[in-house]
Image (tube, rainbow, N blue to C red; front, side):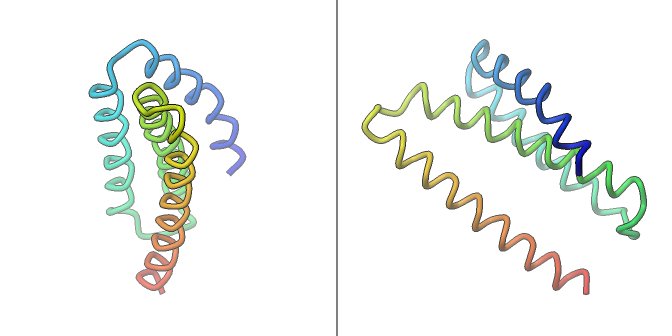
Length: 111
């Protein structure tokens, strides 16, 4: 997934700039909408080795990065300094558990 790693740079910079410029209610809503859309792209895909599957995965990674940046920008703007660290840590823990659950469930559904 070198392509997604390379594409994260401009997407992250763009989303960071948009998150600074516009209100969180717009950036977070757009981020979650795009993330949901990226998950729906997988529905018609049947072959995991299809080039469209790789493109869908890259889009899913990029939309996840956009969603996270928008939410973190909101947190850093609105949460007190004394609780930012723990909130960021909880976000990472919840995200990691979500990835593990999603991977395990997806593996069982695929097999």
